[in-house]
Length: 341
Image (cartoon, rainbow, N blue to C red; front, side, top):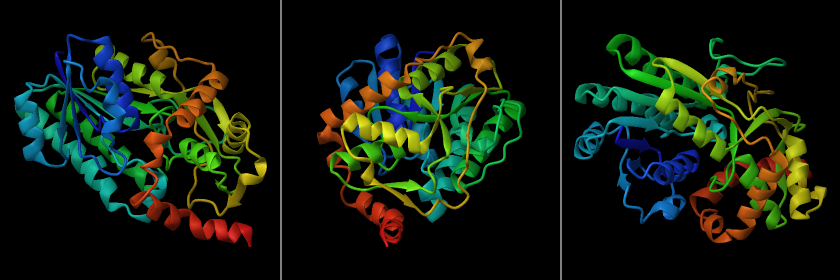
């Protein structure tokens, strides 16, 4: 591999992967293709903007003409697909965009890659495709049982990747990552939402009793895992990537408030999300066998994450305007009003 196309590379996890790859592999050319929807942000790529092995193209992965042009122009050898609509709440409010990007977009990428003879394709997926379980860990061979439109669309994209491996012999791999946190995360997701809202002494809308369990994985560990699977993962295989760090949402919320020096009175327990998965957990034996190791110091990484948002208000304050505010009002205004009534 010499020329790697990273779709969705201006997003949260995608940009972390790009920053990692540009620095680690100066002999590769890393090309980002991103539509720059609300969560795509070129500020996420400022650390590599002037690097000679980085390129950026704006475009939609569901647009076959654009995809073909970029693949041909840069003589792409491999594709790593991060491009996705990724927020469960938005998928419940309106599902159409999730099908366009997470299913049709994956098909377009695969078909254009097949037509041009590009066999190396990595799909970035999520542990949410499994559904949830009360105890134990999901293994890669477990049945997919997605419970919301977002995870259903991601599962659909995975099935298309599998089909192109079996039918056309493409060298495909898939990773299913757990809840990821760290710098540059769009502030609709729980951790940056609560950090930035608490900085401004605004109420934190905790769904239901807050006892939902999530497995927290730092974004740098996630990026390194995808790098590893891209290079040594077996064709047609799926790899779980988990933080092996289960936490109740309410406990993470309390810790964030402690780190920020803010009172627990900011917490508001609001009406729960429809079909809210109770617990995620994945078995990471398979990717560990490839040599992957995570940073297990959650307390230190959480403190670093909080400090990053405190230091970088320039990054998130300009995001939390316009379209973001409309989403926030639609999603939380009535819930917060009901919680205070």
